[in-house]
Length: 614
Image (cartoon, rainbow, N blue to C red; front, side, top):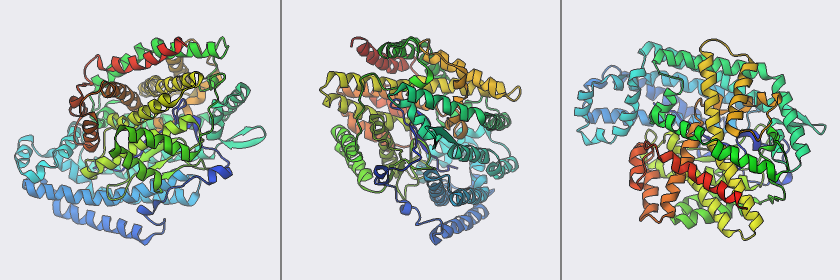
């Protein structure tokens, strides 16, 4: 059954992940920025409603198991539909509690009370889930012909997408006893290692200019206009990760082995197969995307960074130069109120219906805006549950890329609001499509900014920033995917030393970013801070999938396709009820077409063509 998931999205205009993350010192300006109000979920950790919801979920789960366990195959279509509906109600109660704990922890993972609370909630939810585990296992054992007959009942036909997606995992399902053991041990297994990673990152401090700052603030200085500041930060971060690299290597090795054991038990063909299956996308489609991007490394990243080195007057770029602002670029501070206006105008201009949803997010306490100690780096949108509303976490520094991140996360938020009508089981979108609305929102905002800018130098800065954004979303994420693939493949033959993981990291960075860079050994530890590798193995290609898909989709929009906005909103409202082929068909697009990815990559190349003419 579905459990609430985050939609992590990290700053990427031009930097990704923690490289533009949280500041350790809350300035007066930051302290005036809005924080979210989670009371739509619960009033606090000691809210009696929370305890009541968990107790009710536990009682209902036990009653559910007593009523239905061992009996699903014999139920009529209408009765099976009723059972699914009851299961969804229980899962939504659990999802609400889980969402609250996750969001509290994301806002302040350094608080020991919050950390303990989050772990306690996870353990309680796992205990409750044990009573529900039988449900999907039994659903998957129903014979195809028998289920097809039951689906003739309109009540069960409503749940056809849920049944379709659940039964995808039939070949990988284990016995009830083994599934129960794996579920119960998860809180002391992978979840615990992920928690160790989060708390370690939050606790690390980097000494810069005589002050101890968070890793996030140190990484944020890699975007400073002063090269000496960037170099100092890059080396200091490398030293801190180097001093802790054995721990990060242990976490990585343990989680890779844990996944390998699980994949072996479930007979997945390769480490990425389970992710592809959950994304409802074929291995071959992902392979085509990865192959197309890798082939285009020279046409895209190599070409752009050679231009950047020339603009900066450097023979070679160091790793701390990758996110440097261009010479003469003044990325002015954009106040929060102006950022809201920029994004609001962009969405309003596309469709007032989407603009109305955006306005709700921007006027209600649904967004946690300022950097703060202990706060999760980067940004994400969390759908929570349909009976509440999504929440967005940012670390807003007032740069152009922060405005783009706001536009991105609001795209997720709109998608989650529109899809909520599908209910808890069917509103969640596969990762490959979850990035569509967010990246499309970025493109709308970028074009709005570009169209409004009259200064040629500033236009070049915006265009270069967009290219770096897209390279980080496409090239860098596919390089991350290659890194994960190689690490997981090698882990099958034994534990990897930290030095070997660093070698793989440098290999993929050299291949993807190209000869403009001089990668030194101090960069070999920078794999350690990427949270996707820990929390969501093989998640990263979804960004490239979404970016290339949106480039093609935006091309259809710019060509003036009739009824585009109506089709687009219908696509978002569908949530997880349709697959990518069905969702893209109204726009004349097909991700399984070998030429599809080329269209998306051509957009990036076209932007670089424009820059070469400047």
